[in-house]
Amino acid sequence: MITMTSTGGGLIRYCKGVFTKSLCWKLATGPRPRRHITTIHSNLTEIPTGVFQAKAFTPQTPILIQRPEIYDPAKIAAGAGIPAIDRWFKSEEDKVGNDVVFQEQYFKPFESTVLPYELVTPVFDSQDGQDILRKFTSENSSFLSRYLPASDVTIKELLEKCTLADRGDTLERNTFQPTEAGITSAGEVNLDGLLTGRQLELLRRHAPLFQKFHSFHAPLELIITASRRKSGSAQFGLPGLYIAQAQMADLPQQLRDDLPTPELVLAAGKGDVYDANIWIGTPPTFTPLHKDPNPNLFVQLSSCKKVRIFEPRKGQAIFAAVRRKIGASPTAAFRGEEMMQGRERVELKEAVWDPMNLDGDEVTVRPGDALFIPKGWWHSIKSEGSGLNASANWWFR
Image (cartoon, rainbow, N blue to C red):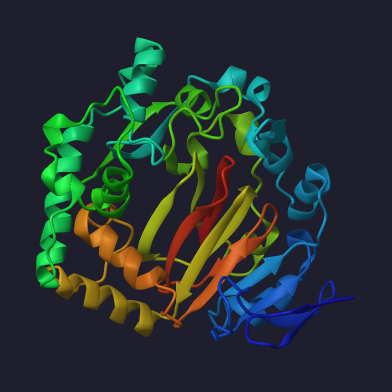
Protein backbone atom coordinates (compact mmCIF):
# COMPACT_ATOMS: atom_id res chain seq x y z
CA MET A 1 0.00 0.00 0.00
CA ILE A 2 1.32 3.44 -0.96
CA THR A 3 0.26 6.60 0.86
CA MET A 4 0.38 9.96 -0.93
CA THR A 5 -0.34 13.50 0.19
CA SER A 6 -3.01 15.39 -1.73
CA THR A 7 -3.43 19.09 -2.29
CA GLY A 8 -5.98 19.45 0.44
CA GLY A 9 -3.55 18.04 2.98
CA GLY A 10 -5.33 14.70 3.30
CA LEU A 11 -3.93 11.30 2.53
CA ILE A 12 -4.68 9.04 -0.41
CA ARG A 13 -4.17 5.35 0.21
CA TYR A 14 -3.19 3.43 -2.89
CA CYS A 15 -4.59 -0.07 -2.82
CA LYS A 16 -5.96 -1.98 -5.79
CA GLY A 17 -9.73 -2.22 -5.68
CA VAL A 18 -10.14 0.16 -2.73
CA PHE A 19 -12.21 3.33 -3.16
CA THR A 20 -10.50 6.53 -2.10
CA LYS A 21 -11.08 10.22 -2.55
CA SER A 22 -8.62 11.87 -4.96
CA LEU A 23 -7.60 15.53 -4.81
CA CYS A 24 -5.72 17.55 -7.40
CA TRP A 25 -1.97 17.49 -7.02
CA LYS A 26 -0.24 20.72 -6.17
CA LEU A 27 0.22 22.95 -9.18
CA ALA A 28 1.21 25.97 -7.10
CA THR A 29 2.34 26.66 -3.58
CA GLY A 30 -0.21 26.34 -0.81
CA PRO A 31 -3.36 24.23 -0.59
CA ARG A 32 -6.02 24.49 -3.28
CA PRO A 33 -9.14 22.85 -1.86
CA ARG A 34 -11.41 21.29 -4.47
CA ARG A 35 -14.37 19.03 -4.40
CA HIS A 36 -13.20 15.43 -4.31
CA ILE A 37 -13.70 12.94 -7.13
CA THR A 38 -13.99 9.27 -6.34
CA THR A 39 -11.07 7.22 -7.63
CA ILE A 40 -10.79 3.47 -8.04
CA HIS A 41 -7.19 2.26 -8.05
CA SER A 42 -7.54 -0.70 -10.38
CA ASN A 43 -7.13 -1.86 -13.94
CA LEU A 44 -10.16 -1.10 -16.10
CA THR A 45 -10.65 -4.79 -16.91
CA GLU A 46 -10.78 -5.79 -13.24
CA ILE A 47 -13.64 -3.62 -11.97
CA PRO A 48 -16.87 -5.56 -11.30
CA THR A 49 -19.80 -4.16 -13.26
CA GLY A 50 -21.91 -3.98 -10.10
CA VAL A 51 -19.32 -1.82 -8.37
CA PHE A 52 -19.14 0.57 -11.33
CA GLN A 53 -22.93 0.77 -11.47
CA ALA A 54 -23.25 1.50 -7.75
CA LYS A 55 -20.44 4.06 -7.54
CA ALA A 56 -20.78 5.85 -10.87
CA PHE A 57 -23.34 4.84 -13.50
CA THR A 58 -26.52 4.67 -11.40
CA PRO A 59 -25.93 7.86 -9.34
CA GLN A 60 -24.40 9.53 -12.44
CA THR A 61 -21.27 10.59 -10.57
CA PRO A 62 -17.84 11.11 -12.17
CA ILE A 63 -15.25 8.50 -11.32
CA LEU A 64 -11.57 8.07 -12.19
CA ILE A 65 -10.33 4.53 -12.78
CA GLN A 66 -6.60 4.80 -12.17
CA ARG A 67 -4.33 1.96 -13.22
CA PRO A 68 -1.41 0.71 -11.08
CA GLU A 69 1.98 2.44 -11.34
CA ILE A 70 3.57 0.34 -14.07
CA TYR A 71 5.66 1.41 -17.06
CA ASP A 72 5.41 -1.54 -19.45
CA PRO A 73 3.08 -0.53 -22.35
CA ALA A 74 2.09 -4.15 -22.95
CA LYS A 75 0.97 -4.55 -19.33
CA ILE A 76 -0.84 -1.20 -19.38
CA ALA A 77 -2.65 -2.23 -22.57
CA ALA A 78 -3.59 -5.61 -21.08
CA GLY A 79 -4.86 -4.00 -17.88
CA ALA A 80 -7.07 -1.61 -19.82
CA GLY A 81 -8.11 -4.23 -22.35
CA ILE A 82 -7.10 -1.83 -25.15
CA PRO A 83 -4.34 -3.26 -27.44
CA ALA A 84 -3.99 0.11 -29.23
CA ILE A 85 -2.08 1.48 -26.23
CA ASP A 86 0.84 -0.82 -27.05
CA ARG A 87 0.40 -1.40 -30.79
CA TRP A 88 -0.16 2.15 -32.00
CA PHE A 89 2.46 4.12 -30.06
CA LYS A 90 6.01 3.87 -28.81
CA SER A 91 8.35 5.84 -26.60
CA GLU A 92 11.22 7.37 -28.53
CA GLU A 93 14.45 8.67 -27.05
CA ASP A 94 16.37 11.46 -28.73
CA LYS A 95 18.39 14.53 -27.84
CA VAL A 96 15.37 16.32 -26.40
CA GLY A 97 14.16 13.51 -24.16
CA ASN A 98 11.78 10.59 -24.17
CA ASP A 99 8.44 11.10 -25.91
CA VAL A 100 5.56 9.26 -27.54
CA VAL A 101 5.31 8.83 -31.32
CA PHE A 102 3.44 6.58 -33.76
CA GLN A 103 4.43 2.99 -34.51
CA GLU A 104 4.67 4.05 -38.15
CA GLN A 105 5.23 0.61 -39.64
CA TYR A 106 2.06 -0.65 -37.98
CA PHE A 107 0.03 2.14 -39.60
CA LYS A 108 1.63 1.86 -43.05
CA PRO A 109 -1.24 -0.18 -44.59
CA PHE A 110 -3.82 2.30 -43.29
CA GLU A 111 -2.28 5.66 -44.27
CA SER A 112 -4.96 6.35 -46.89
CA THR A 113 -7.81 6.08 -44.36
CA VAL A 114 -9.66 9.41 -44.41
CA LEU A 115 -10.48 10.90 -41.00
CA PRO A 116 -11.85 14.19 -39.59
CA TYR A 117 -9.27 16.78 -38.50
CA GLU A 118 -9.23 20.08 -36.66
CA LEU A 119 -6.65 22.87 -36.82
CA VAL A 120 -6.52 26.46 -35.60
CA THR A 121 -4.64 28.84 -37.93
CA PRO A 122 -2.27 30.54 -38.30
CA VAL A 123 0.10 28.13 -36.54
CA PHE A 124 3.13 30.00 -35.26
CA ASP A 125 6.23 29.03 -33.30
CA SER A 126 5.96 30.53 -29.83
CA GLN A 127 9.77 30.69 -29.64
CA ASP A 128 10.45 32.72 -32.78
CA GLY A 129 7.07 33.59 -34.34
CA GLN A 130 7.70 31.74 -37.60
CA ASP A 131 4.73 30.49 -39.65
CA ILE A 132 4.85 26.73 -38.98
CA LEU A 133 1.92 25.85 -41.26
CA ARG A 134 3.52 27.61 -44.23
CA LYS A 135 6.82 25.86 -43.52
CA PHE A 136 5.15 22.44 -43.16
CA THR A 137 3.21 22.92 -46.38
CA SER A 138 6.31 23.89 -48.35
CA GLU A 139 8.34 20.95 -47.05
CA ASN A 140 5.79 18.20 -47.69
CA SER A 141 4.12 16.70 -50.72
CA SER A 142 1.48 18.67 -52.56
CA PHE A 143 -0.75 15.61 -52.09
CA LEU A 144 -0.84 16.14 -48.32
CA SER A 145 -0.66 19.93 -48.40
CA ARG A 146 -3.81 20.25 -50.48
CA TYR A 147 -5.86 18.94 -47.56
CA LEU A 148 -4.65 21.63 -45.16
CA PRO A 149 -6.56 24.90 -44.73
CA ALA A 150 -4.85 28.12 -45.70
CA SER A 151 -4.22 30.68 -42.99
CA ASP A 152 -6.70 33.55 -43.19
CA VAL A 153 -4.09 36.01 -41.96
CA THR A 154 -0.33 36.16 -42.21
CA ILE A 155 1.87 36.36 -39.12
CA LYS A 156 2.40 40.05 -39.94
CA GLU A 157 -1.34 40.68 -40.01
CA LEU A 158 -1.83 38.63 -36.87
CA LEU A 159 0.81 40.66 -35.06
CA GLU A 160 -0.91 43.86 -36.13
CA LYS A 161 -4.23 42.63 -34.72
CA CYS A 162 -2.53 41.55 -31.49
CA THR A 163 -0.89 44.97 -31.16
CA LEU A 164 -4.24 46.72 -31.48
CA ALA A 165 -5.84 44.32 -29.00
CA ASP A 166 -3.08 44.96 -26.49
CA ARG A 167 -3.43 48.70 -26.95
CA GLY A 168 -7.17 48.39 -26.34
CA ASP A 169 -6.60 46.40 -23.14
CA THR A 170 -4.14 49.00 -21.93
CA LEU A 171 -6.52 51.87 -22.68
CA GLU A 172 -9.24 50.10 -20.70
CA ARG A 173 -6.90 50.12 -17.71
CA ASN A 174 -6.24 53.85 -18.34
CA THR A 175 -2.50 53.26 -18.24
CA PHE A 176 -1.62 53.31 -21.93
CA GLN A 177 2.06 53.56 -22.71
CA PRO A 178 3.51 53.13 -26.20
CA THR A 179 5.03 49.68 -26.61
CA GLU A 180 7.72 48.45 -28.93
CA ALA A 181 5.14 46.56 -30.98
CA GLY A 182 2.83 49.57 -30.85
CA ILE A 183 5.52 51.79 -32.31
CA THR A 184 6.76 49.26 -34.87
CA SER A 185 4.22 48.58 -37.57
CA ALA A 186 3.46 44.98 -38.46
CA GLY A 187 4.64 45.69 -41.97
CA GLU A 188 8.17 46.14 -40.67
CA VAL A 189 8.33 42.61 -39.25
CA ASN A 190 10.91 40.50 -41.03
CA LEU A 191 9.56 36.95 -40.99
CA ASP A 192 12.87 35.58 -42.21
CA GLY A 193 14.39 36.62 -38.90
CA LEU A 194 13.39 36.42 -35.25
CA LEU A 195 10.64 38.56 -33.78
CA THR A 196 11.43 40.66 -30.75
CA GLY A 197 10.57 39.37 -27.30
CA ARG A 198 7.78 41.92 -27.01
CA GLN A 199 6.25 40.89 -30.33
CA LEU A 200 6.33 37.22 -29.31
CA GLU A 201 4.66 38.13 -26.05
CA LEU A 202 1.87 39.92 -27.95
CA LEU A 203 1.33 36.87 -30.18
CA ARG A 204 1.20 34.48 -27.23
CA ARG A 205 -1.19 36.73 -25.31
CA HIS A 206 -3.65 37.80 -28.01
CA ALA A 207 -3.35 35.46 -31.03
CA PRO A 208 -6.16 33.11 -29.85
CA LEU A 209 -8.61 35.99 -30.31
CA PHE A 210 -7.91 36.05 -34.04
CA GLN A 211 -6.96 32.49 -34.95
CA LYS A 212 -9.56 30.63 -36.99
CA PHE A 213 -10.86 27.12 -36.38
CA HIS A 214 -10.95 24.71 -39.33
CA SER A 215 -12.46 21.24 -39.63
CA PHE A 216 -11.64 19.11 -42.65
CA HIS A 217 -11.04 15.52 -43.78
CA ALA A 218 -7.64 14.12 -44.74
CA PRO A 219 -5.75 10.81 -44.82
CA LEU A 220 -4.26 9.31 -41.67
CA GLU A 221 -0.89 9.89 -43.36
CA LEU A 222 -1.24 13.62 -42.64
CA ILE A 223 -0.97 13.33 -38.86
CA ILE A 224 1.75 10.68 -39.14
CA THR A 225 3.78 13.15 -41.19
CA ALA A 226 2.89 16.05 -38.89
CA SER A 227 4.06 14.06 -35.86
CA ARG A 228 7.61 13.63 -37.13
CA ARG A 229 10.25 15.77 -35.49
CA LYS A 230 13.42 17.00 -37.08
CA SER A 231 16.57 15.67 -35.45
CA GLY A 232 17.28 17.44 -32.18
CA SER A 233 13.99 19.36 -32.21
CA ALA A 234 11.33 19.08 -29.53
CA GLN A 235 8.61 20.36 -31.85
CA PHE A 236 6.40 18.27 -34.09
CA GLY A 237 6.27 19.13 -37.79
CA LEU A 238 2.81 20.65 -37.32
CA PRO A 239 1.69 21.25 -33.72
CA GLY A 240 -1.99 21.45 -32.82
CA LEU A 241 -3.23 19.12 -35.57
CA TYR A 242 -6.06 17.02 -34.14
CA ILE A 243 -7.95 13.97 -35.35
CA ALA A 244 -11.11 14.83 -33.42
CA GLN A 245 -14.10 12.58 -32.83
CA ALA A 246 -13.19 10.11 -35.56
CA GLN A 247 -15.69 7.28 -35.36
CA MET A 248 -14.20 3.88 -34.71
CA ALA A 249 -16.70 2.44 -37.18
CA ASP A 250 -14.85 4.26 -39.97
CA LEU A 251 -11.49 2.67 -39.13
CA PRO A 252 -10.09 -0.39 -40.93
CA GLN A 253 -11.02 -3.64 -39.19
CA GLN A 254 -7.53 -4.25 -37.77
CA LEU A 255 -7.54 -0.85 -36.06
CA ARG A 256 -11.09 -1.39 -34.77
CA ASP A 257 -9.95 -4.68 -33.28
CA ASP A 258 -7.32 -2.74 -31.31
CA LEU A 259 -10.12 -0.78 -29.60
CA PRO A 260 -12.55 -3.34 -28.15
CA THR A 261 -15.50 -1.87 -26.27
CA PRO A 262 -14.86 -2.07 -22.50
CA GLU A 263 -17.09 -4.51 -20.64
CA LEU A 264 -18.33 -1.71 -18.38
CA VAL A 265 -19.76 0.08 -21.42
CA LEU A 266 -21.59 -3.04 -22.59
CA ALA A 267 -22.89 -4.19 -19.22
CA ALA A 268 -23.50 -1.16 -17.00
CA GLY A 269 -26.54 0.17 -18.84
CA LYS A 270 -28.75 -1.14 -21.62
CA GLY A 271 -25.78 -2.13 -23.74
CA ASP A 272 -26.55 0.67 -26.19
CA VAL A 273 -23.30 2.19 -27.47
CA TYR A 274 -24.37 5.53 -28.92
CA ASP A 275 -20.99 6.34 -30.46
CA ALA A 276 -17.29 5.42 -30.14
CA ASN A 277 -14.45 7.69 -31.22
CA ILE A 278 -10.71 8.26 -31.26
CA TRP A 279 -8.90 11.54 -30.64
CA ILE A 280 -5.24 11.85 -31.73
CA GLY A 281 -3.25 15.07 -31.84
CA THR A 282 0.13 16.75 -31.92
CA PRO A 283 0.17 18.97 -28.82
CA PRO A 284 -1.11 21.35 -27.80
CA THR A 285 -4.71 20.16 -28.12
CA PHE A 286 -7.61 21.77 -26.29
CA THR A 287 -11.38 21.36 -26.09
CA PRO A 288 -13.36 24.18 -24.44
CA LEU A 289 -16.07 23.71 -21.81
CA HIS A 290 -19.01 21.65 -23.09
CA LYS A 291 -21.31 18.80 -22.09
CA ASP A 292 -22.21 15.49 -23.74
CA PRO A 293 -25.70 14.15 -24.52
CA ASN A 294 -24.86 10.69 -23.14
CA PRO A 295 -22.70 9.10 -20.41
CA ASN A 296 -19.07 8.96 -21.51
CA LEU A 297 -16.25 6.53 -20.72
CA PHE A 298 -13.01 8.28 -21.70
CA VAL A 299 -9.82 6.18 -21.91
CA GLN A 300 -6.35 7.64 -22.42
CA LEU A 301 -4.14 5.84 -24.96
CA SER A 302 -0.91 7.87 -25.08
CA SER A 303 0.65 10.79 -23.16
CA CYS A 304 -1.63 12.55 -20.65
CA LYS A 305 -4.64 14.82 -20.63
CA LYS A 306 -5.89 17.13 -17.93
CA VAL A 307 -9.65 17.37 -17.45
CA ARG A 308 -11.76 19.81 -15.45
CA ILE A 309 -15.29 18.61 -14.70
CA PHE A 310 -18.25 20.57 -13.34
CA GLU A 311 -21.63 19.36 -12.13
CA PRO A 312 -24.51 20.45 -14.42
CA ARG A 313 -25.61 23.58 -12.52
CA LYS A 314 -22.10 24.96 -11.99
CA GLY A 315 -21.02 24.19 -15.53
CA GLN A 316 -24.14 25.80 -16.95
CA ALA A 317 -23.53 28.90 -14.82
CA ILE A 318 -19.94 29.26 -16.09
CA PHE A 319 -20.99 28.72 -19.69
CA ALA A 320 -23.92 31.16 -19.46
CA ALA A 321 -21.77 33.83 -17.80
CA VAL A 322 -19.20 33.61 -20.60
CA ARG A 323 -21.88 33.75 -23.29
CA ARG A 324 -23.45 36.82 -21.70
CA LYS A 325 -20.02 38.45 -21.42
CA ILE A 326 -19.44 38.14 -25.16
CA GLY A 327 -23.00 39.19 -25.99
CA ALA A 328 -24.22 35.77 -27.12
CA SER A 329 -27.20 33.65 -26.09
CA PRO A 330 -26.52 31.75 -22.82
CA THR A 331 -28.20 28.65 -24.28
CA ALA A 332 -26.31 25.48 -23.40
CA ALA A 333 -24.24 23.90 -26.14
CA PHE A 334 -22.49 20.66 -26.85
CA ARG A 335 -19.04 20.65 -28.46
CA GLY A 336 -19.70 23.05 -31.36
CA GLU A 337 -17.64 25.11 -33.79
CA GLU A 338 -18.68 28.44 -32.26
CA MET A 339 -16.76 27.69 -29.06
CA MET A 340 -13.61 26.58 -30.87
CA GLN A 341 -12.34 30.00 -31.96
CA GLY A 342 -12.26 33.68 -31.17
CA ARG A 343 -13.34 35.37 -27.99
CA GLU A 344 -15.65 32.57 -26.84
CA ARG A 345 -12.78 30.06 -26.88
CA VAL A 346 -10.53 32.51 -25.00
CA GLU A 347 -13.14 33.45 -22.39
CA LEU A 348 -14.16 29.82 -21.77
CA LYS A 349 -10.54 28.80 -21.30
CA GLU A 350 -9.90 31.63 -18.84
CA ALA A 351 -13.10 30.97 -16.89
CA VAL A 352 -12.51 27.23 -16.56
CA TRP A 353 -8.73 27.03 -16.12
CA ASP A 354 -8.20 30.12 -13.97
CA PRO A 355 -6.18 28.93 -10.93
CA MET A 356 -8.60 30.86 -8.71
CA ASN A 357 -11.57 28.82 -9.96
CA LEU A 358 -11.91 26.17 -7.26
CA ASP A 359 -15.25 24.80 -8.47
CA GLY A 360 -15.41 21.37 -10.02
CA ASP A 361 -12.93 18.51 -10.23
CA GLU A 362 -9.55 18.34 -11.90
CA VAL A 363 -7.96 15.05 -12.89
CA THR A 364 -5.03 13.90 -14.99
CA VAL A 365 -5.58 10.78 -17.08
CA ARG A 366 -2.57 8.68 -18.10
CA PRO A 367 -2.36 5.84 -20.63
CA GLY A 368 -4.63 3.06 -19.35
CA ASP A 369 -6.63 5.35 -17.04
CA ALA A 370 -10.36 5.77 -17.63
CA LEU A 371 -12.65 8.64 -16.67
CA PHE A 372 -16.42 8.30 -16.44
CA ILE A 373 -18.19 11.58 -17.28
CA PRO A 374 -21.94 11.45 -16.61
CA LYS A 375 -24.50 12.84 -19.04
CA GLY A 376 -24.86 16.60 -18.68
CA TRP A 377 -21.65 17.15 -16.70
CA TRP A 378 -19.56 19.96 -18.17
CA HIS A 379 -15.89 19.41 -18.92
CA SER A 380 -12.88 20.93 -20.66
CA ILE A 381 -9.86 18.90 -21.78
CA LYS A 382 -6.29 19.80 -22.68
CA SER A 383 -3.18 17.84 -23.55
CA GLU A 384 -0.25 17.58 -21.16
CA GLY A 385 3.38 17.21 -22.16
CA SER A 386 5.05 17.19 -25.56
CA GLY A 387 4.31 13.65 -26.77
CA LEU A 388 1.73 12.50 -29.30
CA ASN A 389 -1.59 12.55 -27.46
CA ALA A 390 -4.38 10.02 -28.01
CA SER A 391 -7.65 9.03 -26.36
CA ALA A 392 -10.71 6.91 -27.05
CA ASN A 393 -14.23 7.35 -25.78
CA TRP A 394 -17.53 5.53 -25.76
CA TRP A 395 -20.89 7.27 -25.32
CA PHE A 396 -23.37 4.73 -24.04
CA ARG A 397 -26.71 4.25 -22.32
